[in-house]
Image 1 (cartoon, helix red, strand yellow):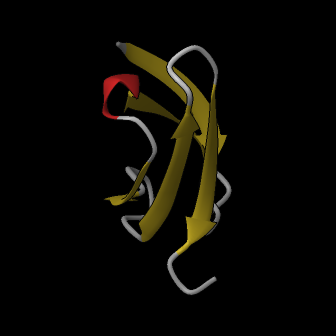
Image 2 (image 1 turned 120 degrees about the vertical axis):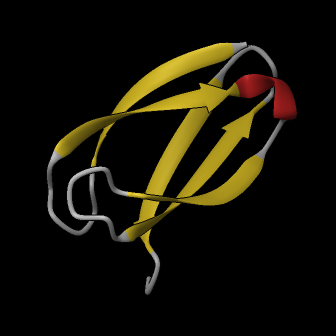
Length: 60
């Protein structure tokens, strides 16, 4: 199941949107910000019904 989530880049502060695949369970992965191109750590927590997304700088 795919969901979209708005977030703010922890580097440049721009509002952007991520597409999340909830079918894979809990996930940690990096994606570059589409605005400033810096690596963002995405941490997705899900139980299949509810989910939470956290975004962090690579150096946090």
